[in-house]
Amino acid sequence: MRILALILAMAALAACQQQTAEQAKLTPVTVEQAETMVAATQKSFTSGDTNAIMAQYTDVAVIFDQGYLAPIVDRQLQTRLTQGFAASQPRDFTIANRAIQILDPDTFVVSGVLNYTIQLGQARQPVRARFTHVYQRQADGIFKIAHEHISAPPAGSPL
Image 1 (tube, helix red, strand yellow):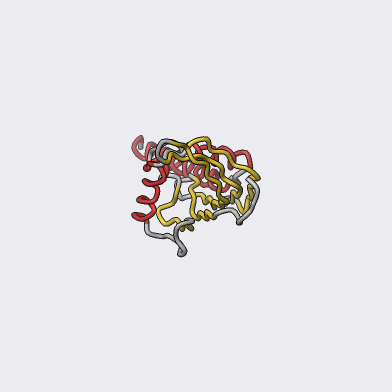
Image 2 (image 1 turned 90 degrees about the vertical axis):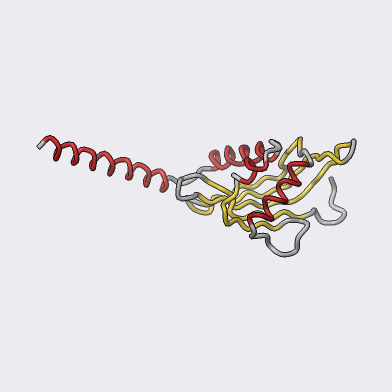
C-alpha cells in the first residue's frame, strides 16, 4: 500500500512540475525580458567566444549576412563566419534606434542600427549596420535567434 501511495504521490508531483513548465511556456515574453535577452546577446558578441555567440542562435537559424547574397542556413558556415567576426575583436557595441516588437508569447523581433568597432591591423575601425533579429522560444523555454538580417546602411546615410 505504501508503494502505491508513493507512486501516486510521485505521479502527482510530476504532473505539477509538467503543468508549471507548460505554464511558463505560455507566459508571454515582455519588452523588459526581451531587452534583457538582447543585452545578453550583445555581451556574447564582444566575448571573443565563438561558442557563446553561436549559443544565441537556433540550430536551424537563417542568417542574411552583408557578405552573402543568399540566406545562410549551413551551421558550419555560420560558425566559420562567427569565428572571423570574433577574431576581429568587436567592442564598443551600441544599438541606436532600437525597436522591440512582441509578435506572440513565444516570438519577438529586435531591429535597430548596430555601432561597434573592430580591430584592423593596428587601428580600431568603426562599423555600422542595420539589423533585425527574430527571437523564438525553444522547447526548453530559452529564447534564441531564429532569423538574422544584417545590412549596410544606405549610401550617404549620416553617421
